[in-house]
Amino acid sequence: MSNTQQDFTERLLIDAGICGGMRVLDVGCGTGDVTYLLARLVGNTGVVVGADHDVRTLSIARQRIAPQHYDNPTFIESDLLSLPESLGEFDAVVGRRVLMYQADTVAAVRAIAKHVKLDGIVVFQEHDTTLVPASLDGFPLHKRAQGWLQHMIEREGADLHIGFNLHRIFTQAGLAVEEVRGECLIQTPNCAYGLGHIVRACLPRILAHGVATADEVAIETLQERLDNERSQSQAIYIGDMLFGAWARKLQ
Ligand SMILES: C[S@@+](CC[C@H](N)C(=O)[O-])C[C@H]1O[C@@H](n2cnc3c(N)ncnc32)[C@H](O)[C@@H]1O
Image (cartoon, rainbow, N blue to C red; front, side, top):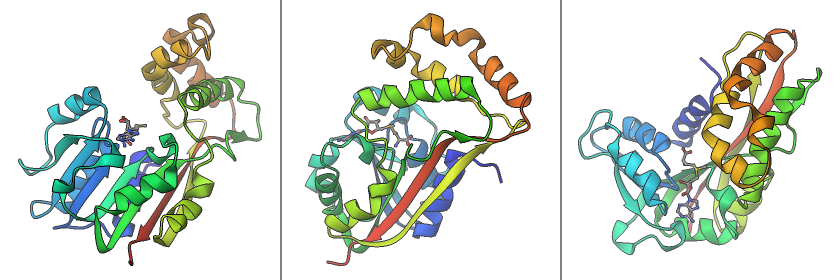
């Protein structure tokens, strides 16, 4: 099994109990990576709705091809704090890298939980930079590139330490935590890891926030230089740590 964010998400959702026939809401769905994964997991008898307040990403999500069922998923434009009552109740509400952007995370989880039926679950995947980047060797370029991404999302208001807070947030929102897990994305000298591609996708935001200049990033050669740095080392590098948690609505 490859060690990617999408693998982690799939295992998290399955272990949390997402299965065929469920009605699931994906809050902050973005371009729909998790929403379409959910559509596959719930199958033809389930229902998946993706919600996001960004019309631009929703239009990209809507253009993707549903894996197996014409009716799934559907998408709505909505802030997660004011989801329409007409959505009804869900067996599960899921979100990935969304809570980290909320000013009041407990209020956000409480708002979401209103749309979960009794005994249903809330599942979130977030990240945390408290322990990373980590390596025994220097990896200066990896650390610089990772730093650009971290400073960018920090300037966009994200909480970089939310993973360690997930248990507290769920509990304060009145949910019963069932599991919190964390996993590192390990980069070995010969593994393919597209940190440079991620920086390229984020470059306009990196530049807009004044985190680095185009000359400093030198995007055309970045991925190649990162690959060289990793292949010249016998060591491993950990740039990202993923946290997942799920909790049940018991009252
Ligand atoms: C980092 S992206 C993650 C997208 C998707 N969950 C994924 O993992 O691929 C965060 C998404 O959350 C959305 N978002 C953040 N705060 C939101 C809110 N209060 N209500 C609705 N969507 C929100 C953003 O518009 C963005 O699409």
